[in-house]
Structures are given as C-alpha cells and as structure tokens.
Length: 113
Image (cartoon, rainbow, N blue to C red):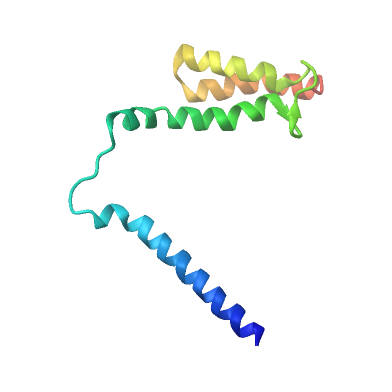
C-alpha cells in the first residue's frame, strides 16, 4: 500500500522536475520577440568569466585540504604569480603555463614544496 503512494509521489516529482526543466530551457524560444538584458546586467555579465576563473583558481593556489597554506614553502605560491606576470606581459597562454610550471616543478620536485 505505501509502495503505491511512494510510486505515485515519485512520478509526480519526476514529472514536475521534467516540466520545470523543459520550461526553463525553452523559455527563450517561447517568447515571440527578442529578449534583451538591461544594460547594467549585460555589463555585469562581462565580469562573470573572470569572477568564475578567480573563484576556481585562487582557492587551488592558497588553500590545502580546506585550510589556508600554513607556510610560504609551497611551490604554488611562487608559480602562480610568475604565471600571472607572464600572462600580463605577453598575453600568451602557452607562456603562462610553461613559465608557471618552470617555477613550480623545480620547487616541488627538488625541494618538496
């Protein structure tokens, strides 16, 4: 008896989630005229990739196992600024990666940082 209630409830939840998913994904197709963002929202969205990248990269550089890096003897603390400086100097992703790794690998492999 309770299994039938659970099955009906599960079906309702699945149907509701499918309806919400279809509605939100088709929202832009349902409208009959082009949809534009306000200027302030459009400008704010230009910063979203930089904010997302910083939100991913910075914790990987300054945190270890959920805590701030306990001391300065961490190769990431030296490699990340070198990579950032190389990027702002030449705007080259390949130079950024190779420069950062050129600092990171010797410190990590030779000194164990």
